[in-house]
Image (cartoon, rainbow, N blue to C red; front, side, top):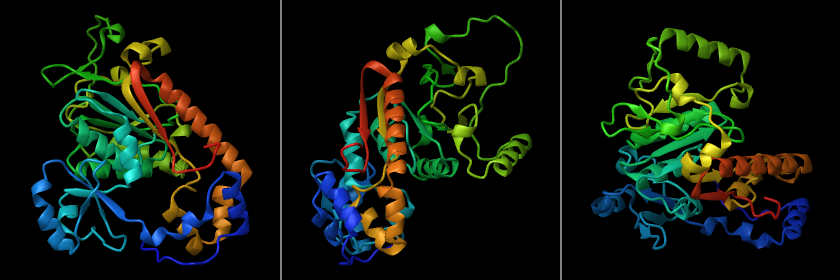
Length: 343
């Protein structure tokens, strides 16, 4: 939805909130001058002129963010050929900065602990190319399904797996892929040494067509839990995995293997991104929408002390768990679109 800029005054309660956090209220009156940003998939640079001709607008390169371009806020890209073909996608420069700060290297195993709606996840996969792995986690099934759609649309899901799970308690190791790329391989310290000859079902190539029994179970879960939040179920739900994500050839026990916390320090994730749920007060465009939604909505989502306390507690839990899952010597980036001191 396109939001037209307005000059309505901000509510006094919000102005007081900004001043308490050392923020200048005038920054929220400049939303109409903030450009939109897109990221061009690597390898599509030769098509920039063609894209510019189609959208009738010049793309301005963002020099400090490779493959990022800015364009006027009124320009729409959703109907362009480049967008439909998955050559460009919309992503804020701030989101790109958070991913860039991870300093991703070839072969890294990356955890995106709050993955939805998926633009940062796609950028991470783009940077890894055909190496390493990305594990995306989100508590809301419908939002993570949007991530799945994105990685498939942009053909980036080969090294990706997606779990509906509570990011504050998620505790699964990254999987490694053996050199033949056909079977899952876990680190030796967690390898199953059982010599049992019992036949074990393993994950085959992912398909969107689920067995009847699985569809029936999912329908029952939706009926009994309309919110579909993973915090209300005991195990993470794997809703997507790519050909080289380390899942194919593994049994369920291998994918969901429980490990001790001290094993993450040696065999955990190389990079962790925690882009936590927040009040969104740092998003100028988001605040601008409250003029259309109603300022009472802002009161409930941003200014309500109880909600803010709940969010900061959640943020701390996400940050703590992300650090626990991080390999020694790895990097964790924590980000929010809030400018408040507490967040």
